[in-house]
Amino acid sequence: MNCSTRSVRHKRAPGHPTGGVSRRPRGYTLLELLLVVGILMICAGAVAPSVMGMLASYHLKDGVQKVQSALGATRVQSIDATSTYQFRFEPGGRHFLAVPTDIEVLNSPGSAASAGGSSLSPAMFQSGMLPETLSFQVSASSGPAPTSPAMPAASDPGWTAGLGHMPGASDFATVNWSDPIYFRPDGTATDTTFAVVDTRGAGYRFTIREVTGEIFVHPLETESH
Image 1 (tube, helix red, strand yellow):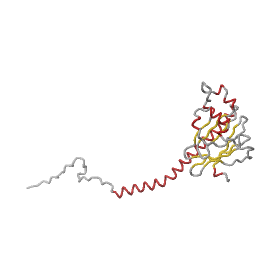
Image 2 (cartoon, helix red, strand yellow):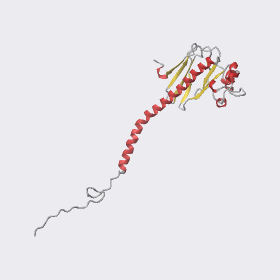
Image 3 (cartoon, one colour):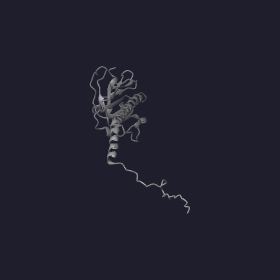
């Protein structure tokens, strides 16, 4: 009897093209997960200081630009309005403010913003706050010593008159202000230096020239060069 050989074909199970035994994918062990988490923490710890440093530098430059812009605008407003302006800041704090101090300007009808004439247009004032990580620092002036001590803000009639015409003046009632920095209509100013510093000790020094009223800003670390 002739026996014919028949090839036996196995049906492949659906979803298993090789016809082999199916295996579930192996999961991660606890040790492997802890190893990955540890590597991520090491990477984060290495990157965090540089990221924090970049954020601190950004906040410092942002605050310095705000003060520089306010000083420049105060100088221009003083000339345009033909009024002496006072710029003051909060030593050890974050507030700064500039107001016109000439009674004639404060009482001029064209400057009043309200119907009663009690407040002036907000555009006539410069005010702001430094970021939370920054503060103002008083510096010794490079100019000659003043012939008389500066008048405290609370006792200065020009300052109190200007502040009294400012919208929202109550927000600044409890601020301990610095000595005044005067900007005059002829372009001159008080010869002054002060600094803006952050919690790292980095900062910028502002220098205002008396004759020209120019404003110079330099990093603190370059002063010795």
